[in-house]
Length: 83
Image (tube, rainbow, N blue to C red; front, side):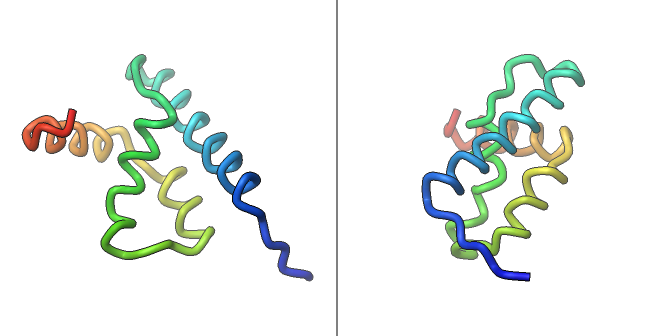
């Protein structure tokens, strides 16, 4: 099986689609104002410390994000004045 490299635009589009999908899931759970950008901000907050993650970790981080983790992120961000 050949390893296929994604270019930046393809990777960016794939990440945006995954985050939008997760935001739609949260909207079905009643969090109606969540956007794909909000999901990305929550998931990517640790990448500044860790560096660029491998693609499989990135996908896992997006799709395994729980609503409670997202709400904790929002609460802490609000306390710190980021929102």
